[in-house]
Image (cartoon, rainbow, N blue to C red):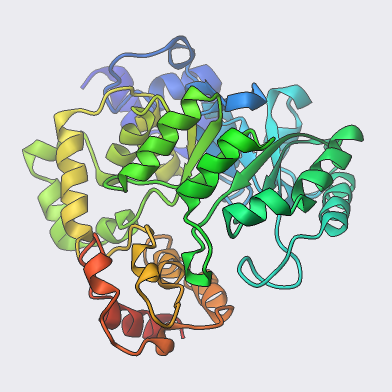
Length: 407
């Protein structure tokens, strides 16, 4: 190990900050053995990609307002310049590391939710969305939000065609200079008779003023999602992957997994790092938003994002994760929901399980679970859903297990 790599191995948070942008990323974030690097990477920054029709050049890793205050300054130094759900910050709580920069050098996102209920029971209301964003701009003192994002998205293609409330609210705000670009965070809604995320996003790419979308995407996911990414890229439509790290948190605390990862074939990689490299290797994807709780996670993710090639050790780590997840971790494809006679939001329930077991956020998981109209106890154990599960999960047993955890 050379002197720089020795320094990287023992770099502390204080040292990371002290060294500064180029020095910190040049030392702390090259310890993973970078392969081909871009000009941005050579400068010690995360790679950036064009966020579709917005024209924004955003960091390959997206930051979030719920990240630890200790992590955010380090993320800024590593080159994170796009912040998800930034409306949660006020003028007093916005991190100094962000607001001390020139306003045009970073991009903030405001997220609007349905009103009068959750993302399944609530409704779109142009005036309330307009007022929400207007007040958020005033509270934050940022002047404007770069991206106005419709959280959770449309229930169906028909709703996207016929309900213009979101678009009208955006147009009004844009005319006042309070927002600049329109995006969506799209979920599946087959449990309430709606459409799948990839079908809705495909429609939006071709037939709407939306400029970008965020949706579930992970290793081993459905071909339809890979196809949407290619279609989006062809049509200059930005994409952000979310919920990419299924099972990674559980694997990190599993003794058998850790013993296996110590084998030579996995040397230099972990399931988390391999997942980030795999995401970054897809040139059709703009960026990924990954829950990041601490310095170690950030360091691993940034180092992986700066590499452009998935090595054999990374493939082994991804395959090991896939095997670990088989029968245990939901990929959130929602195919099972189509076959559920009770229309239970199975994918949502298993998403909340992820919050508890992968993000180690039991409080959030229980809070989300309580909002469901039908929870795991609504299952009648017919088993009709199970043949549709590509992860081979015993869904009937899993729903009981999750209810015991979160109910």
